[in-house]
Image (cartoon, rainbow, N blue to C red; front, top):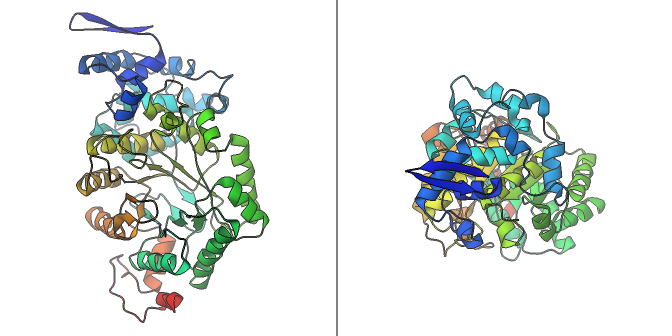
Length: 457
């Protein structure tokens, strides 16, 4: 039982699960689940009570029983108890103050990253204003490598997303070249295929690999199909760089995706066996999103933001190259409007970063949400100020295959110009060599004679 007194009224919360849900900033998904605070007063009382909870108590109080959920078992069995000693004496409120303290620097945060459980990260985020989430995340640095170096201070990478509604190779190639000529693609060139046909998926893999090898592009490719398809592609000799999978924060929700931890480990080992990375061996790419557990009726009464943070424990276990939240993709049933999407994006980025993830964000919304591109501009700017690892680049910000609104190649140029953010260094050198950018990173004008355009011949 947790309780506090506010304006003469005693507020009681029967479990940590309830306390976390009631302390969460309002969002439509928690309202749909029936776990949201009934009033602003109750939400504030829950925050006050949560601030007094020791981090040790959170570690000792699994929200989903250990015996019932392999994600819970992963969180507890892999917890870094030695590093936890540095923060084990703190309450959630103290933890917020510690994160924001100037003395808590990048090196310190790196040392404790694997001691921070998802529930601790989610709990402290509920006590933080947007500016707190931005400032604390900006102190975190997570660097990963495959064919280039992602996550360096002062850098921003872009996933080039050249989707096509029929997986047409020329259509995909046109979008890909458009992105490369805008300087996008250093995070990954990643296609969401419309088809699950293995021959089609293999054809897409070979096309991306051919272009990357032909022009010696220091980046990696990924076909964002189900992990079982990727395993079959590897068995058939396809040139697979990264293994992709959507993941969630409960065993039941992951079961709805058709995956478990053992399958992800098998896929990682298969990708490592190909030895395709030239600079590093981070071979996994995960996507997450608030609402995935609720949409699968697999949330166990846990609020959607805490479920999202639990997905980061899954991702962290497999040392990924990239992780991104698709923050507004699931729809207004879970994040109703621009304000809720902005808050969720900042929460996700903060929780991922303090847990040690190379986290990016698909700054996005669906057309039936109460949001627009101005909201996305706001979230994009705030995330880049917070040290976002990578964002998504879609032609015109309009994904014609997935039918949602994301960010464009131009948006990345805006962020680079505004905040002085650089490409991954190896990719930046290639852009200069190919006369796509000037040595200072500024975009050059190109014409129909550019060698990349020979792909369309």
